[in-house]
Length: 84
Image 1 (cartoon, helix red, strand yellow):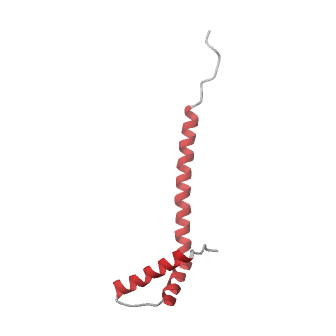
Image 2 (cartoon, rainbow, N blue to C red; image 1 turned 180 degrees about the vertical axis):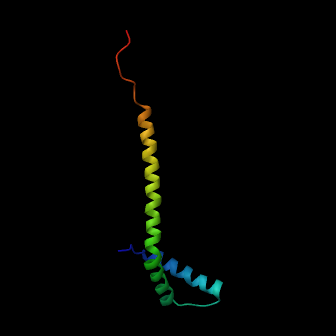
Image 3 (cartoon, rainbow, N blue to C red; image 1 turned 45 degrees about the vertical axis):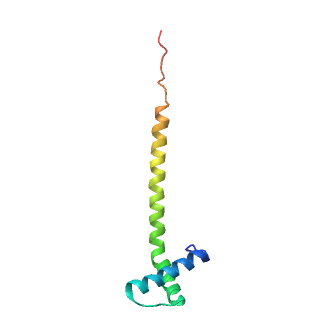
């Protein structure tokens, strides 16, 4: 299940879609057409963008874990027989 947009977010994106069509294509599209296009984009592009976000987050966490591992290793002390 894909997350849904808040009403304010959806209204903003619909307005941007309408603006794009008017400025770039010289076409006017109504709220319903822009909403349908938005739903199509969410359904088709959403999973790709979501997965990319997960991949980016995973890389960031892996980097932080590697840095943490290095920091922990730097705290180790040598062990062995005490010097006489």
